[in-house]
Amino acid sequence: MAIAWSMDEKVKKASEYFGSGMYCSQAVLGAFCENYGMDKGAAFRISCGLNSGVRCAEVCGAVSGAVLVIGLRYGDSKDVCNSMTEEFIRIFRERNKDVTCRNILGCDIFTPEGKAKANSEGLFGTVCVKAVADAARILDELGC
Image 1 (spheres, rainbow, N blue to C red):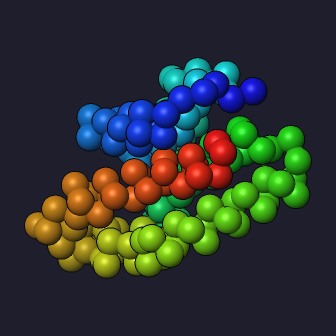
Image 2 (tube, rainbow, N blue to C red; image 1 turned 30 degrees about the vertical axis):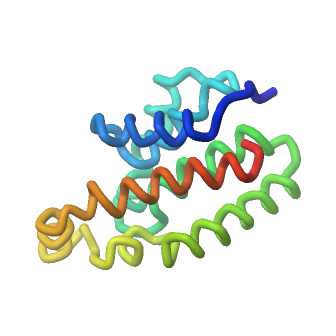
């Protein structure tokens, strides 16, 4: 059962985790995991490889972390979990253009040119911060 908390607290916590060096996937799952009885250290470990679009600029790590949270909250029912995941994806896509890392950032960070662009334009500190905060807000809207 979920513990009552404020959305602003979760957005702040996810943003703080990301700002302290956690990956986007870790930041989102880490902000919510303890509400569902998951140890924060385990959450950080299990979500570590999901960052940067599963390390190939595909599905955004904030999205992947959020889908894990949805599984913690709604995973007892495949139908409900699938429905909530689809709704999360729909809303996230509306707010961030897409769900893929390369399209959200506007560059492929797994090419030298893309990584240079992301670093020179400060995209990790702007675009990724927004994606992490949006993921936490949407999770709240979905009752996670």
